Length: 504
Image 1 (spheres, rainbow, N blue to C red):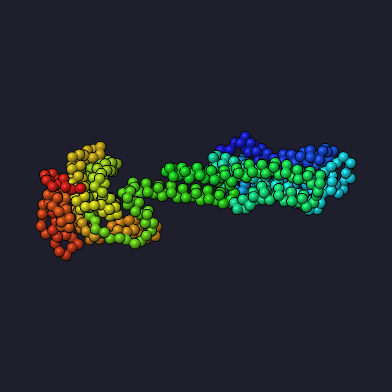
Image 2 (image 1 turned 90 degrees about the vertical axis):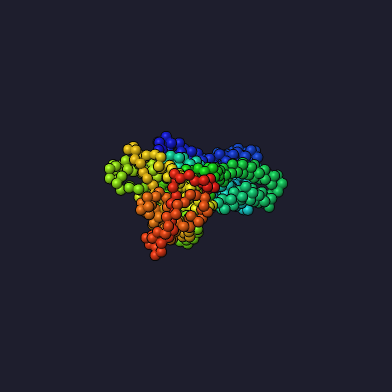
């Protein structure tokens, strides 16, 4: 929230920056008077500065700042003042440049319409046309530059304040960084040199010495003040962006940098904020996916980003289901059922992840997991069997939920070629696994209830494990969806498994 005191303070600071050029103007006039050794015309020259650079400039600056002041007092929305905000340095500096042209044209033309008294050395000696033009233009350029960069420095402070209090950031950019560099170079080097060269071609003797001395003194003051604000104007936005980038490299995605300049650096800062926002949204999506599917599946979906090309790979598929779940669901309240099921699934997930498996999706009271797709898993058939045994041991020795429900798990495992890819249409896409291997694992899970078993594996899984588990052959069994019977094998997790230690 922006208070009335904040608004008043910000307005006063702007007025100070807009009127600060009077200090340089007064210093130059005093320098002229000191070098010339005369002070009789000081009231005219200083008076012009007071009228234009203080009084009239104060009125114009107040008018330029009025929309921003209305925003600070809550009378206008931010969008209504963005254009004025970004153009504030240029408008203020342009006003000062016009005033300086008027002031210095008046001052340097005094000798042409006021008769010089005998004691006046330089202030009322007629300048050459070349010196008149170069001096007026050079001083106008210096005044413009100093005011522009002083107000730009103020704009950075104002934008930073608005960002901290309201979160609003500039998204209109009228300044040009290259042009700013060019202006800075001209005011630091070209303007002083041009004034001195004009003196060299216009005067000689004592007049030349005095003119060059005045120009050098004026240039030193102007360049010193301008360099200070130029450096702040260029470096401050870069420092803000650098600090924000360093925070992002440290893993902080809650960073949002204030846009404190009206040029390409400001635009880059805005793009940086958009980039971090995108990273934050991506991380949120990844975390959200991770609550419903395995994090590695979420990562695969995000990395593919609409890539419709699938891949085929040998993998082992594991399906689980709860025996008699329909009957259990009839006597448990919904919240009790969900609590028990969540606790059960957490228990089942642990062994799958521990052995390198990936849970692709939950199917009611069961789940569908894969080994070696999408994450590589060495010796994936044995890893899946090992996970199934650990699931049975973990689930069989406990109850779930506040009601202490015992849940028996059936597992079906099959090994073979699996197709993985993003499937869907329009905005609804998901990463899934397809193929006969997947279907067979699901059928084997169903066959457990007909054979009174807890884990059934296919011939391919049995062969891939190489006798490292105590399998029980159940013969050739017809399987729904297949024209020929297949060999299936059971695994009893309670049997003594002498070769179990060789499993991964």
